[in-house]
Length: 410
Image 1 (cartoon, rainbow, N blue to C red):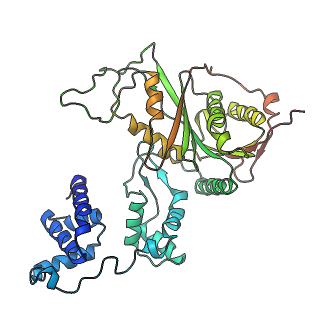
Image 2 (image 1 turned 60 degrees about the vertical axis):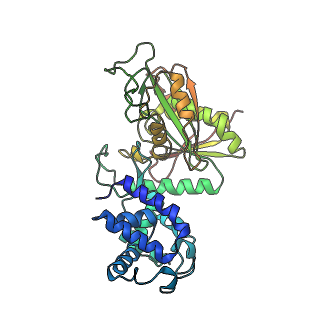
Image 3 (image 1 turned 180 degrees about the vertical axis):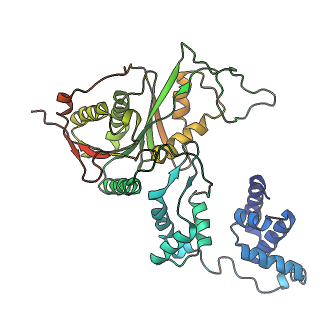
């Protein structure tokens, strides 16, 4: 089988040669490359060049029949002018990619350590649904378009954290509808979560980085917590529409007070300038941890924030066992993990700098701050205080979907 490095090399050669080749010499060159590679060569060349497998098979037949060497290119069969032939579907149907994305986005899953996305719908089913939308498309073309959209066909992986709730899929659709509605109204939508705790010091960090041969970074053999440096707790806020985020690097405990303090910091530094006319804020979060749907302190702190900002805060929680589906996981945290791969997190300042320097080709921007405040655990919200929260539950799954209105200051 052909490895990824070989496919990349073929793609580079094709990009360099393509401007100097006509339609016929392009396919003949591709056929020659495919024959040289042997088994799997046709698929590899098709993937690297964008030429169809049918075109490469046709060119291989020409080579075997001697048609390619029967006469010079100039005196051979008529060559179609550059730009001729059938247009790409994405050109004749400008909405095709967005329609395909709309079909897979509500059911997109994400591995928090990888930016790749994948969908649980088959290409045959997606092609059938696209045809009902008026597109003339095959499952093979859907496969190519999914690759273009950065989706990847992957095998099963042990990621489930609990039994599936009967309203799980309905909750995903409900969250998707809420996000679309808020964005259409110009209201901010944020995804929040805590990244895993990180040891600070000369400790091993998985991944590889470029160093001079024989001079790798030296780290501790054992991962025992440094009593002076300790650990850090990155809590993130990701703006879905703006593709911007804020990460508060805490040094104490991951509590609801810390979580809402990070949202407050995001609003003061990023949210308010982007949404000066906002009257509501939608927060999508996991169902556990410091921002869990059952945490009283989480709702109490959101109430205090709503009172301060004078806006209604809506919260939608992902069903139990689906924390890896949160947008922040595969749109922000995964890129942070890649940016500091193979590098010891020697100090808190290093963590803040590495997070701040994380960017993507799609324009991701992240602001990181160090939060040295103390957030003690065990804080309780008694019944009399909890009863004062201006909490209104949605009709659908009110434990997961609710809003907190600002209370009057009169």
